[in-house]
Length: 478
Image (tube, rainbow, N blue to C red; front, side, top):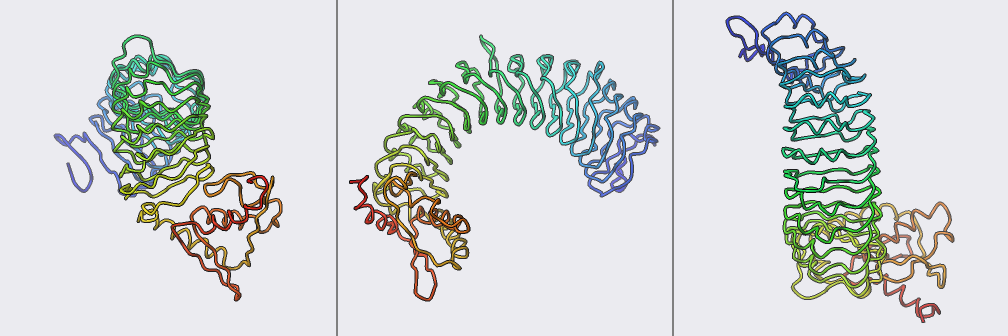
C-alpha cells in the first residue's frame, strides 16, 4: 500500500484505492472502470459530488465500494445490484435520490448495504430476499415507503436491520423474528401499523435491540415476548399499544432499557419488573397505569432512570426502597395521585441524583435533608436559580393567593395551585409560570423596598408555609 496515494498494487495492477478523509473534491471518474483488478474503492469522508458512474458496477473484482459522507447525487446505479462479487456497498450521508433497483438482485456475496441518510424514495423491493448473505441492511433517514417485504425473512444471516425514519406502512412481518442471527432492529419513526406479533412456538432469538417507537402499532405487548431471551433494549413508545404490561415481563432477564411511554397501556405496574436485575432505564410516562408503585423496584440496584410521570392514577405512597438506589439519576413520578410524605428515613442516600420530579401529586410534609444534600441535584438547582434571577430581576412581584375554585391544579407542595393565569396580565403570564416552578424547588423570593429580589434556597419550603397559612380561611379546605 502506497501511504501517500492510497494505492495497493500487485505486479503494477491496482487492487485497492483508499483515499478517505482527504477533503477531496470533484466527481468520481468513470475511468476507474479501467482498473479491472480493483477490489476496494474507499473515497469516504470527502466532498465528491455528481453521479456514481454506472460502469463501476461492472468492475469484475469489486468487493468494497465505500463513498460515505460525500455530496453524491443522482440515483444508485442498478449495475451495483448485479455485481456477483461485491460484499460491501456503503453510500450513507450523501444526496442520492430516486428508487432502488426494482428488478432482480443478483448480489450473492453482499454482506453490507448501507444507504442511510440520503433522499431515496420508492419501496424496498422484494428481491432484497435474494441477498441471502446480507448481514447489515440500513436505509435510515430516507423517504422509503410501502411495506416491509416478507421476503426479508429469507435473510438468514441478517444481524442489523435499520429502517428508521422513513415512510414505511403496513405491519411488521412475523418472519423477521425467526431470523436467529438478528441482533438489532430499528424501525422507529415510520407509519407501521397492526399488532406486534411473534410466531407461536419456539423462536431461537438472539435479538438484543428492538426499537419501534413513533409508529402506529396497535394491539397488546405479546404475551410470548419471553421468547426474546437475549433482549437488552425494548423501545416501543409513541404507538397505539393497548392492554397491560405482561405480568411475566420479568422473564426478560437481560433487559437494560424499557421504554413504553405515550401509549394507552393500562393496568398496574408488574412487580416482576424487579426481577430484572440488569435494568438501568425504565420509562412508562403518559400511559394509563394505576395502582401503587411496587416497593420491589427498590431491588433494582443498577437503575439510573425511573419515570412514571403523567399516568395520573398511580396512587399510594412512594416506596422508601426506591430512595436507596444509589445509581439513580432521575426520578419522575409527576402528575399522578401519590400521597403521603417523601421518604425521609435516616440512611437514605442518592449520591447521583440529578432530577427529582414529583409535581402534581398529593404529597405533603417537608423536603428530607438527604435530598437537599444531594450535591448533583443542588448544583442543578443553583444553575436554575441564576437563570430565573436574571429573568425576574426587572419585575416588581406580588404573589396573590386565590381561594376556592380558582385553584384547580395540584402541585407537590399544596393541593391547590397558586392561582389561575386568567387573572394575570398577558405580558406577565410567562413570568408567573416561572415563579411557580421556582416555588416547586423550595426557593423563597424576598422583595425589598429598593426593588431588588433575593432568592434563598431552604430545606423546608417557606413558600409552602405561606400558602398554607392563607389556606386556613379557604372554606374548601376546612
